Image 1 (cartoon, rainbow, N blue to C red):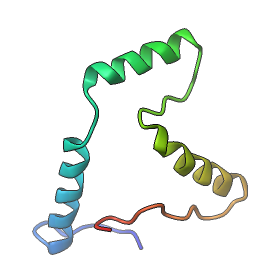
Image 2 (image 1 turned 30 degrees about the vertical axis):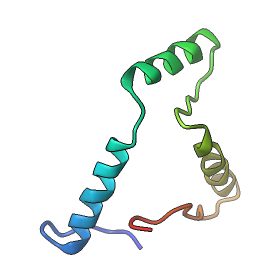
Image 3 (image 1 turned 180 degrees about the vertical axis):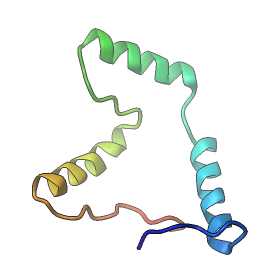
Length: 78
């Protein structure tokens, strides 16, 4: 279920917390830079900064190729 999030709502607050947690648990910019440089040198188009995201990318690509709807790996707040 998609749509707009009403500013000031509980959903907006949870979404803000979700985004903050993502930033707080992110990797250091220098590590991202190393991965980007490695990808450029090796002529890689896609850069997965988190190896565990590979399965999620595969699921989405398979759904797109099959004209299906990708199954969400994780919903906000779960």
